Image 1 (tube, rainbow, N blue to C red):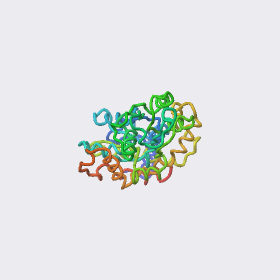
Image 2 (image 1 turned 180 degrees about the horizontal axis):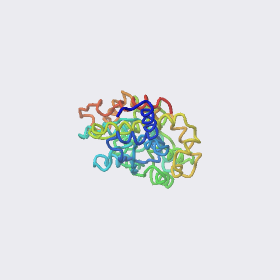
Image 3 (image 1 turned 90 degrees about the vertical axis):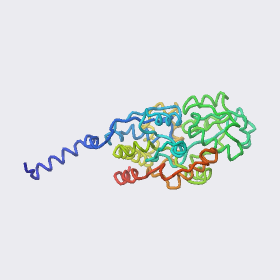
Image 4 (image 1 turned 60 degrees about the vertical axis):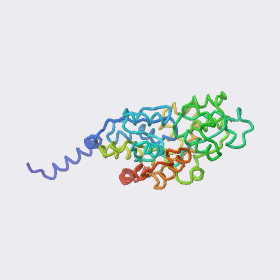
Length: 343
């Protein structure tokens, strides 16, 4: 049968009327699961925005998000095979290569860690230097998570080893706030909105603040990629269209956030993320906005920075021969930016 011009136009109109359906047919795995540790954190704001604004659905994805107390638990779920992809800290890709696990980051959400290390003024009223933390309890989202890694790195610069302190998992929400206010921990390594809430109530004295990109670069000696999407290399190899769809959604969210005002952000996140105080959340967003990625691109020097940070606190990492080019790719993000040049 010969198709005339009218028939061709009709078919084209039908395809445009059902873009999600057409895209879904091209995906190797439209239904998939993602793990994250502390989804309410501003650290993962692009993930939340991509979900609530329907960007994943626009790409034909039916995504189930599993929220854990910390990034280390999200990582374990990926290694164990219970999820397909993780929204987590970039340095896990470097750390796991040293353990024989080939993970690859393919879309960036944070260009600085946004992690703040601060002390409890109630239990440490005479605090002067990081060395004073010896023998103290430090709250982290979960042992082994990026908040733990950050604390270890700052401690190492002060001549302290991880064994010189006690790390306590306090989560990334109201439990962390309660632990500080009750004096159960002497310091905390955590993120917003927890940090801003504690700071405003006088329950935190900031020591190191990597929400400020310049300070993060100074602390780590270079660009330190933070929140990203990462998966096992074999998943990316087998599901390139699915990985592209995920990257598309995150890049759209990254760009929307940079163009959004505080009121837009409040409407885009669940009420429970605000910790009962919208003003605090807005302040936290404004403090963290500069550390969020504007385009999803992972800096080429980022893997080297992550490696140096990890090697400074881990002999296993320091001795390992790693291929840092294999822990990330910008191929998907470049295509996403071409598809979505604006928010």
